[in-house]
Length: 185
Image 1 (cartoon, rainbow, N blue to C red):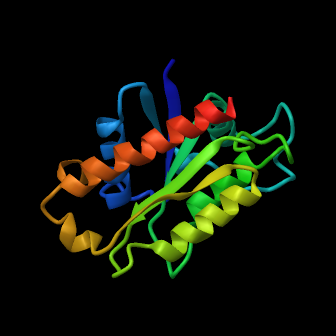
Image 2: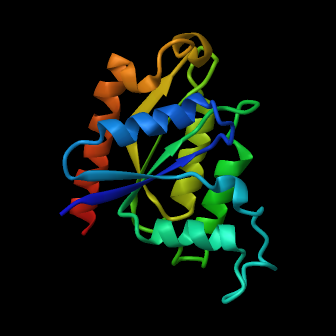
């Protein structure tokens, strides 16, 4: 049985190092783990309970919920914007937290990783992301962490998929997610 992990990236920029990190997760996924990268967070409107109406949910949000509903686990990639979680990632969590108590995140294992230009690799944003996912009902793996500092220089000429530390750490985190999924089942 294959474990399906949904990857959500908190940057919309085409050349985002976090997007590249998510691509590396797809490439380095261990056997039995399929990483699905949802690449349309920019099409999901800001969460508004007035538009979250059964049968009339905006297409972008409906697509996110559909793919999230098919996921066994989540791997979120968060850069750090002004010391906190990017709005696009927080918005995805908000949509996936509804309907209250029965959203797509509820009870499913989740991990948060990422890279940022600063010396700590975006740990503040990643901690805030873990907090939001946990409050939304996700089973956050507290010890599944990977923060890569200095992204602009570290990945200036090297794609994250070709980085030895990335090739070692991402499969380990994906294995943790797969193990947590089996335990939760």
